[in-house]
Length: 219
Image (tube, rainbow, N blue to C red; front, top):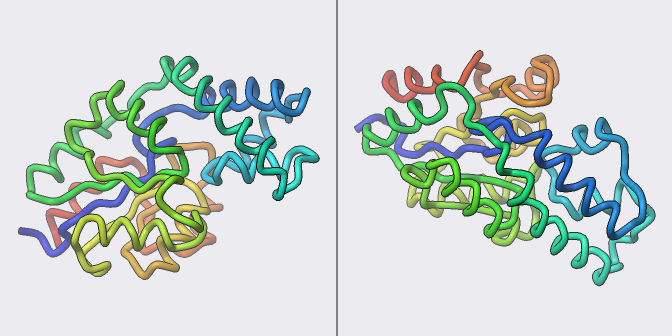
């Protein structure tokens, strides 16, 4: 058994190509709730944050307007499976999870998506074969870049934080992993440039997700 006993992993941009799908689903939700659509670039700059934070940041909706926020979340949930039909696995993601799984390690998804959405895409892509443990927006009070979901992921796996590796593709991911004190890996497979990940001082940066295999093999 390797020293690292669990992989904690982000979803969008780390395991699947889904940015355009999510942008389209969010745009529909913004249109219905606020009557307008933020620029795609503004939405993508907030990838990794909960959708309600996007709403209150990119529109005039106040954080205490719980009715509108809930309406937005529900509309996004409705649009999500429609647009995510176009989502595709990142090259090497499935093979990497298979390798780590066969080492006897646990794999836990850490995502700002709601549990219903996350479960849907795991099943659609076949990732549910390896991922049954999830920490979603529904499970925490504070989300990335706060370390709460990362630490909860370690607890869900029944592991010490020193026994876990966390991988993500956004500065929010890296900041959360570093703050949690968990070995944190950045991978520039999403919307964020390499430099924005390096600025957050991860333990290492890899070119693609398949390099995770050697981290677990050598531990």
